[in-house]
Each structure stands twice: as structure tokens, then as C-alpha cells.
Image 1 (cartoon, rainbow, N blue to C red):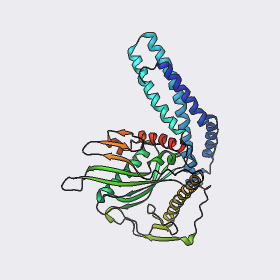
Image 2 (image 1 turned 120 degrees about the horizontal axis):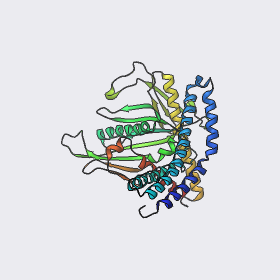
Image 3 (image 1 turned 45 degrees about the vertical axis):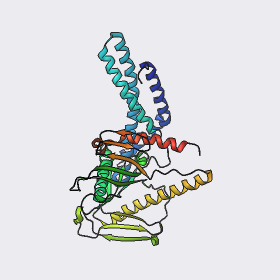
Amino acid sequence: MAGIDPAEEINELAGTLRSIQDVLDLGAMRKQIEELEGQVAAPDLWDDPEQAQKVTSKLSHMQGELNRVEGLVRRLDDLSVLYELAAEEGDEDTRAEADKELASLRSDIGALEVRTLLSGPYDAREALLTINSQAGGVDAADWAEMLLRMYLRWAERKGYSTEVYDTSYAEEAGIKSATFTIKAPYAYGTLRGEHGTHRLVRISPFDNQGRRQTSFAGVDIVPVVEQTDHIDINEDELRIDVYRSSGPGGQGVNTTDSAVRITHLPTNIVVSCQNERSQLQNRASAMNVLQAKLLERKRQEEAERMSELRGASTTSWGTQIRNYVLHPYQIVKDLRTGTEAGNPTAVLDGDIDEFIESEIRWMRRQESEPA
């Protein structure tokens, strides 16, 4: 934004920030925080550990959101004073400091603005992710494991808790598939644009001739079910298999048949869980995963019916969405938004916010376009 007067840009950012505050409704947010603080203070909160975790997680998230907005307001106010000070004293160092803070605020307010775009019916939910290796043999299995690490590192950077329900290891290296949750409010809305096929190009570490290999892995993202969801599952339509959990290379990690695989016969959806020592716990977790998959299927069917009534074609992001090239040059590029990064190592270590923010804006534009 070279050439724009700082005072003018500060006014524009202040207007954007006011719009964000209106959308987030800080008054209602403060009231909800008070209610959650009351629930956290209740002596019987941890009688139900799962519910307690949800309450404390939601409280922490909302407090963070409120502090984030209030912090940006303070920084914007301080920035005006900093520019005034630089002008009065003719201090170039102070002016440079102010310019740097202006650029930082521009980025941070833009990122917060993206949060206001998450207004879909399930956007506020936690996210359930499944990663599957696709074409590419052992390289694809290794690539799937790299993607699993990328999303877990992203969640770790954000301070979000995760739980891996099931990992199916490949024979030589990597994984065939993995299913896990990211337990944070708005995780689904934030990540749903990551759904699709991710393509990796590199020199294969498994090829003794050092040839370039292209491999693919699929990422499936659905919202976690809540008690208000109505998903009817007929027990007669389920096939339930139990087996022993295993680790990398087929190594046994459990001496009992505690792992559970559930097949929903009408849809042929298969889910499994092996992270708990108890078969009952694994079955409960697998049923939660199945409910989430069926909820997403129901949501997609409803969206298709509404699109047919409106005469619109449905939009699908379940295709190739991003290329990760490690050889002969290094770049990560999103095929929908055009967003690029020249440091694949950082991206694969969880630095994917730029891609996420741009795809949220892209999806919002796609969804708001007239049929």
C-alpha cells in the first residue's frame, strides 16, 4: 500500500475493525464468557470430563478471541500516537517502527476479518480429518504421513488439542490412512477448504536410482457431531469387526482384540478406532466418527437438493487442490487461489495459515456467487 497516507490507512483499518466487532458482537461474547466462567467454577464440572473439556476449551477460545480484538484496538490507537511522535520529533527510526507496526496490523486485522467469514451452519464445530494415501505406492504412503504431521503441527502451533482415533500403517513406510480430531471451536470452518487431493513432487527417497516421483494423498474433513444432531443409525445395518491394534510395519501393540472396525452397509462407509485399550471405548469413538461421516453425507445431499431446486450446479472441492514441489525447484501452490509459498519445509511443519485464509475467502466468494 505504498503511497497511501498512514493516517488514511489507519482510519480504513479502524473501520474494518469496527465492522469485525459488529459481526462478532463483543457484548454477547462477554456475556457468554461470564456464563462459561460460571460453569467452569462449578464444583461438579469434572464429573463429566468430556463435557468439562468442551466447556474449558470454548471458554479459552472465546477469551482468546475477545483479547485478540481488544488488543488490535489498543495497537491501532497506539499506532496513531507513534506516528504523531515521529512527525513531531522528525525521528526516522520511530517512523520506521510505526511503518513496521502498520504492516503487522494490516496483516493481523485481515486475518481476523477471515474469522468473520466462518458463518456456515457447521463452521463453529470441531473438525474430524481423515487422510488416505492414493496413487504413488510407498511414496504416497509416506506423503500421507507427512500430511498427518503437517496438520498435527498446525494444531500444536495454535494450542489446539488433537486425538488420533486410528492409524493404518503401510508395510514399508508411511501410512495407508489416519483419522483424527482437532478439538477447537471453528476448526471445521477453518479447515474445510483443505478437503481434497494434495500432490507431492520430489526425488523419491525410496528409489535407489534417485528418480523424481509424483504421489497423491486425499484429505477428508467433516464436522464433529454434537448432541443436537439427529443421525439415526440402525444397528442392523452395521457390521462390527474387532481385531488387534498394530503399529508401524505390522508390529503388534496390543495383545487383545480391542480395535474396532464398523461398516455402515447401506453407504459402505468404513470407520475404525484403535487408540484406546478398551474395545468399548474404541467402539464409542468409531461410532462418533461414523455419525460425523453420515452427518456430512446428509449435509451434502441436502445441499445438492437445494441446488437442484435453484437450478444451480453444486460446488465440490474434493479434487486436486494443492501442489507441493520439492524438486527441481521448491514451491507450494494452491490451484484454486493461486497462493504460493517458496518454503515447503515451513509449510510441511504446519505453517499453512496463509493458504487457509486465502481459501476461506475463495470459498466465500464461490458460495456467494449468483447461480
